[in-house]
Every structure is written in structure tokens, then in C-alpha cells.
Length: 98
Image (cartoon, rainbow, N blue to C red; front, side, top):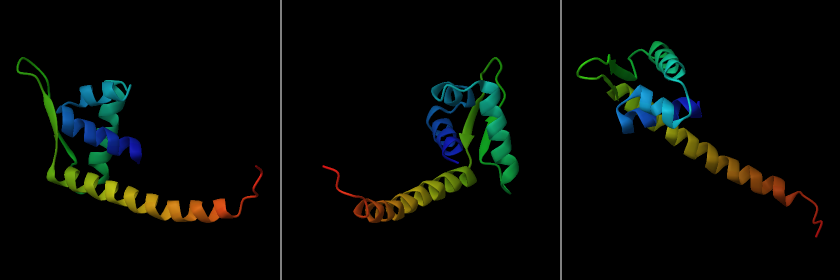
């Protein structure tokens, strides 16, 4: 869904599950749970994460993650275009109340 796509995008931008979660006003635990759900749902993981520690951890989109995100965003564009046409049709059916 759009929230998971936004999370993927923010992980790509920040290199961090924690930072991406904070940007979405989401706890690290919730962000990590969503990452685990997405990784489990696809044949290949979408996010590659390394644990923190003295050198710090990090996260990055895998090739599969980048492909899933690109395809999802394209699907959003297609749906928005189709929706605009339908919305115009519905608006044309409304009464003029001015």
C-alpha cells in the first residue's frame, strides 16, 4: 500500500529504517515490522538491513525493492489518470446549484 511504498522510499533516501520511521511518525518497531512483512511477502527481500553497533547499522533498498517501488509508483500514476476521467464523468452528472 501507499504507506509501505513511502517507507521504502524513505529508507532509500535515509539509509535507515529508524530515520524512515521517524519521518513518518512511526516507531522503529512498527517500521521494522513492516520491513519484515514486505521482505517475507516477496521472493527476494526488498530491504537489506544491517544491525547497529559501534560502526552503526543501515538499510538499503535491494534491486527487487527498487523494482517493486518503481512498479507501485507507476501503478499509482495509472490509477490516478483513470480516476480523473471517472471523476470528470461523475462531476458532469451533478446539478448546478450556483
